[in-house]
Image (cartoon, rainbow, N blue to C red; front, side, top):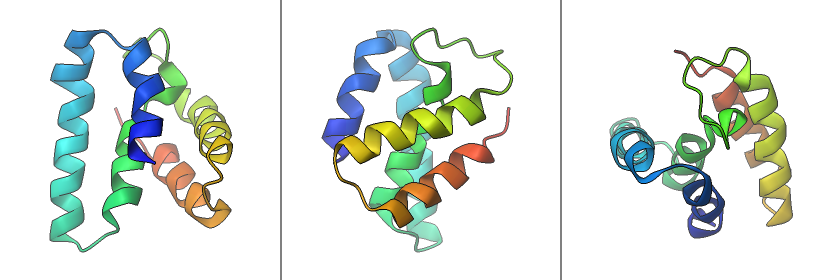
Length: 99
């Protein structure tokens, strides 16, 4: 599931944004998942998808991207038959993304 979700995101962010932003968010989210004993896959998916509402333009100043991001994340995860309860958790994580 991680590879399927990662692929379209890597296609729309440039290498610099991937290397210095998205991959770092994922790295620290995974560290927190271990510390707080939270499901690793859920955390990684939420980290990968937390800015999907900004893609493909990846404007870091975009306000309200959490709302569009929840819809885009749900659509993508449903495409891979991800369970709705887990989709709802990821949407919740996207909703509380802070600047």
